[in-house]
Length: 138
Figure 1 (cartoon, rainbow, N blue to C red):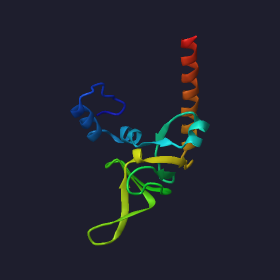
Figure 2: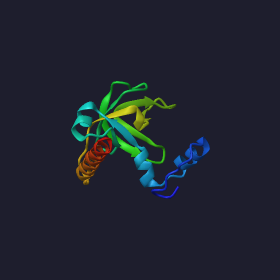
Figure 3: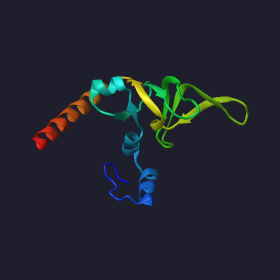
C-alpha cells in the first residue's frame, strides 16, 4: 500500500495484503499500544505508537506482569523487544522475546526526538474532536 492510502474493504485477504505491503509510516501506526489509565487521563486518547525507550507493562502472554523498557522496535515483523523478557533458543541461549505491541500497555513515554510535540498535537486534536461532537449533539 502507498503511504496514507487506507483500505476500505473488510475482506480478510485485502487487510492481510495491506499489512504485508505497508510502508514504514503505515507500519509505525500499526505498532500502537494502549496507554495506562494515568496517561489516558492526562492526554485524553487511548493509544500511541511504541518507540525505543518507552516503559511498558506486558498484560498478556508468558511475560504477563513484567514491566521494562522497549529495547528494539522491529517494523518488519510488527514486534518489539523488552528489557528483561528473555526466552531460550535451541542452543539454550537467552535471546530477547518478540512481543506484539497490542500485548503491552504504555506506562511512561520516552520524550526524545520531538515526541513530546507529537503527543501535544494529538492531545489538541482530540480536544477539538470532543468539542465538535458536543456541538453536534446540542
